[in-house]
Length: 125
Image: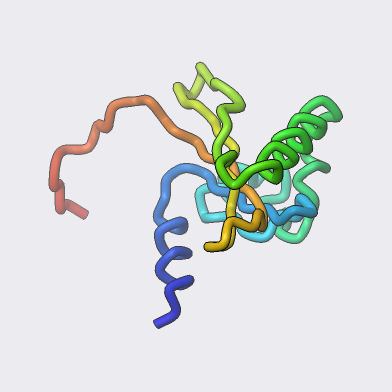
């Protein structure tokens, strides 16, 4: 089976929104959590659109700055970009690279800091 199917399945199950962009800032993938989170902005219809169109000029400049930083070195792969106190999460931009280190895109990673409330190994439906 194609390994990409496994990776897409991992992203599809993630509770955090994942929006993947190419170097032209086109949204090429949104996991179900992202489609739901950004439903008021178009949801799945955002795929194929420019991520920059969803941001103000200051944020657009920051996104461009981060991508330039990613491109400057294969060691530049993740940068902290935002703290959302209301959702108790930190937000990062993460570089996407080919195995040889070539930059091919980026995504935004949300790390929630709330403790898990589910019971361990709760198999209930």
